[in-house]
Amino acid sequence: MTADGRDALLRRNEDEYVLLRGVVNRLRGEGRIDDRFAGEGRDRSVRDVLAHLHAWHLLLEQWYADGMTGGSPAIPAEGYSWRELDDLNVALRDRWADADVEEVASLLEDSHARLQLLVAAHDDEELFDAEAYPWTRGSDLGEFCLECGGNHYAWARDAIDRGLRAETGRERRGA
Image (cartoon, rainbow, N blue to C red; front, side, top):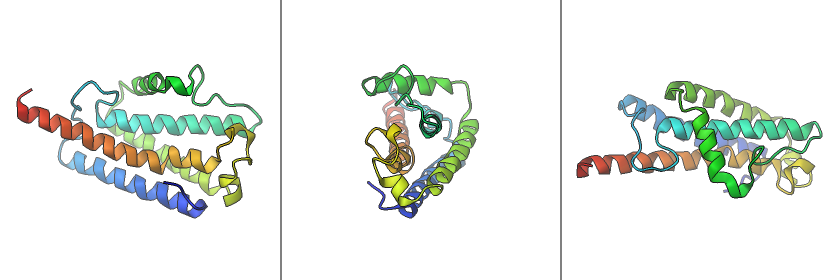
């Protein structure tokens, strides 16, 4: 999904974040917030998924800081190419392996707020002109903000649902 302007991007990011927060709050209320996911997938818990989102917010913040001061940010991250995305995502997950889900949820709340401030600081042309900032390398800043925001939050809800649904099915089978 794309956003048609700054206000639409802000709305999409916020709407998807509210839905994600609703899933997290429901799981917290059900006493399932710390449940492990079934299988050996990269994300093994709600904490892992939330940490993934927060980590990508931090990456975007670093790209933005480097790019807006004339630098050429390492995208997706220093030492990684897009072909090594799986390895990067494992490294990002492992960065918060010792944190609890509540700490990560709080970090995500803060980084989501900063993402929204970043979007709000730009007009439509700055956000959606792929040539506005050379450091985005042919993408527009709004796309980065949507992919690290609303689209990522929708992915996270699905990832949590799949992981916990698979775990519930495994428990029923007696695994």
